[in-house]
Every structure is written in structure tokens, then in C-alpha cells.
View 1 (tube, rainbow, N blue to C red):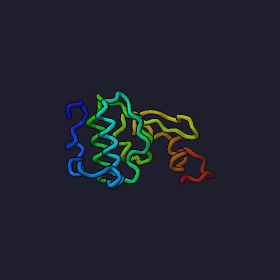
View 2: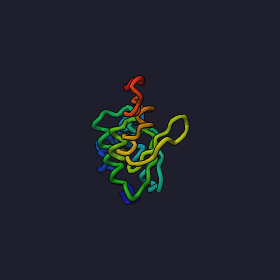
View 3: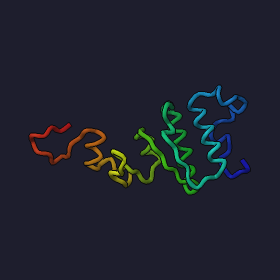
View 4: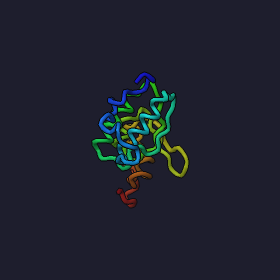
Length: 134
């Protein structure tokens, strides 16, 4: 595309180019929305659960699209799919009760004892023997 955004074929949308948006599946609508956003060449884009309702294969394709935008667009993503987050995020911030509890790489966040306790119900390894370890 001459706009500097990704080519429509890059997002595999050429096959559905003749359809109306309201005829598309949820996953294809998400791709169309992303194409519209990226065609504007934004410095920052906020995505709220962009892969919700997408099958795994489509989530992987969507992740690849975001990865290919590194250096062009910064994404602030609210997402609960940790496989997707791990694939695309340079920095992860974990929020609980409206506050950032921890920030760091995905590996750092996934090892953080406070995050594990809140998100997974897993207690610290050094918990007292009378405390259950989940």
C-alpha cells in the first residue's frame, strides 16, 4: 500500500476484499480493523483484547503482524491470552485492583511471586508449612 502501512496481502485479507465488513467473521473483522489502524501509521495504538474469539492459528498470525510492526508502532495491549502476550510483548505490566503490581519482561513477570499468587493462586515457595501451596 502506498500509505506506508502494511500491504493488504500481508494480512491475508485479499481473499475477503469484496465482502462487506458485517459479513466477516470476528477474526477477519479484527484483521480489517488492524489494517485500518495501521494504514494511518500511528506511533501508538491501544488494543483491548485484540485476539478475543480468535482461533489459535489466527492469534498466531495476528501476533506475527504486530511483531512485524516493531519500530513503527508501539502497542499498548490489554490481553489475558498469555501465549499471545509472551509472543508479542517486550515489556509486560501486571495490574491488580487498578494498580500496576509488577513490570518487566514476560519471563520476569511469570516468575514474580506476587503475580503468581494473584493470577494463579500459587503461594511463595517459602510459605510456612501450615499454609497450603496451590
